[in-house]
Image 1 (cartoon, rainbow, N blue to C red):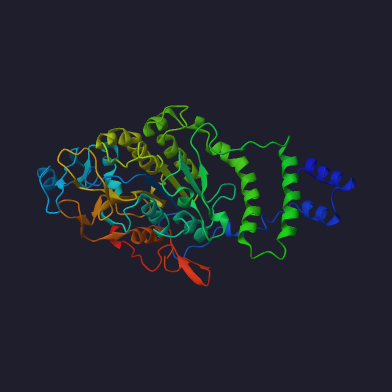
Image 2 (cartoon, one colour; image 1 turned 120 degrees about the vertical axis):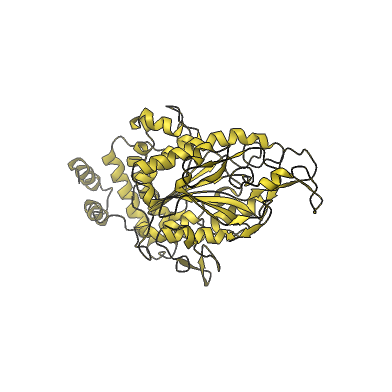
Amino acid sequence: MPTSRRCMIRSLAAGGLLLPGMLQEMLAGESSGSKVGNSLAAKAPHFAPRAKRVIFLFMTGGVSHVDTFDHKPILNARHNQKHTNGDVLKGADWKFSRYGECGMEVSDLFPEIGSVSDEISLIRSMKGDNGDHFGATIGIHTGSTTFNRPSIGSWVSYGLGTENRNLPSFMVISQGLPYAGGQVWGSDFLPVVHQGTRIVPGKEPIANMRRRSISSDLQQTELDMLGYFNRQHLVGREVDSNLASRIASYETAFGMQTEAPEAFDLTSESAETHALYGLEPGSRDSFAWQCLIARRLAERGVRFIELIDSDSSSARNWDTHGKMSRYNKLARNVDRPIAGLIKDLKRLGMLDDTLVVWTTEFGRNPFATFAGALGRGHHAKAYCSWIAGGGIRGGTVYGASDELGDQVAEKPVAVHDLQATILYQLGLEHKKLTYRHAGRDYRLTDLYGQVLHEILA
């Protein structure tokens, strides 16, 4: 313990401000670490993991699969023709090209992501249970389309703990609120300490990150005093996980004041790295900034990092009922940053143990109500997601939709299957990752979920 801080504590005791028990505990320096919030301590996985962390890229609004990652020549050839359901067929507004040694077909909207297709396992047979933004968004995050449940990031934090006590184990970078709002990163019945910490791109990503005390010694003393009273209050209330988690949050916040400012400081990143992500030096509000910060948080031991593109406004997100042409701008915003993230992780040797997951809540309808329609409606019956890194077999395509992109034709993948696969690569058996609540055991995948072994390396 620094001499100055010891003298400070002695002075408080001499002035009668500290009781003997407080003095003894504070002078001990809490050398053993935190007494509360032990649920954040690093835990052993169920089996040897292939990945240590997840970067989860969520595109808000429902990205059209037939315009991005699921080429449908027959649908394109029959553009504006009547379909048996009474609608007209609507072909893609963009051409597709083959990329990489694997020859994966990707829309011209995503040439940069196409350039890393050899690292990607593309799933063309995702199938959702809900065609509403709210339900589908909480479904892809929590496994339930109807009830509040813990987010996948919270489950990973609960199952594995943190590698760095100075940073939250689950962090979400989001400019605005997605459909379903904070439920997307909520912990629900899991201890609150596992809830995602939201980072807002801009000049102050985390509020109150600079300490207000005149010195770190004084702040540590203040925290120790607060901790003493909190622990006394906790006696007899140990079953209250919310209380214990709130106490632990003070300790995490203190650690964040030490480490987070450096994590968000990009001045040490080279011009080459900025260019890789397409990030203008000094910019703090772009998706490119989110991607580079995600890499830095991953380096510093954050278990689960989610990047949310856009918010719940259909004027800004991928929910293009009116004009598909908005995809040109939306794609430019994320294409290079996402590819840059994968390339950067690979050159740093981190892609091998980092899962990068790209998904959306559902796809877009391959039909339209009238010929010449410029937009598309919601479509949960078939859409695309992809995974890279972390023991995933890159350069592969799993499953398929039918010739029109309407229904899954081969190897359907439910949301629970995707979640089970993510957990599996982290060394977690999804059927064993449970939490007792209200008299029953809950899990992220409910009663479902099959690991997609065919896409694993």
